[in-house]
Length: 180
Image (cartoon, rainbow, N blue to C red; front, side, top):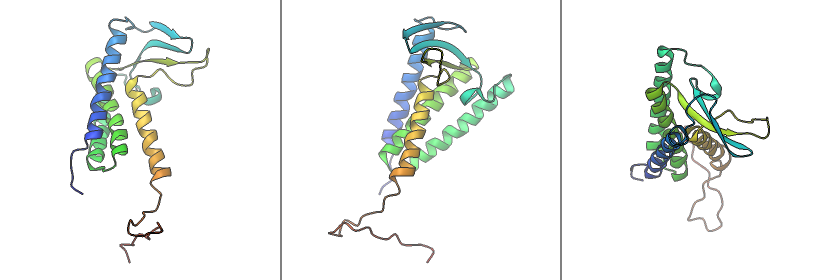
């Protein structure tokens, strides 16, 4: 199989990055939800609420100063590079798209941290006073969905035996052991 650009993954990354940045711009711009405490109820279980996230996932490793901020940028960028390399090598279209979601989300959050010093979080899903998630953004949701898709595919889908197309009965063909 010839190596080519992972078009599905690149398309997913670009689309996600654009959607994330547009959503953040609309929330903090025209909607005016741009300071701590500002919010707007959309429906009874979902608000737009401004939360500047200076840490990483789940508020871990808060970047209290410039050194930590740039360390988080470097760490996230290194992860993004690793995801991009994986995506470039991946031949499965669904995995490319899942990796594209992770990559586009990471780049969106990296851009926030570089420009603003924090990541703009705004999506607040809640049921009364119970909040099953922290306030998040489009990039966070895409990263989570991408990782879940990769895990489900790796754990549940990729363990199927290869079928030899010349075998008329569809019996599983043993995979040769290269160590033998």
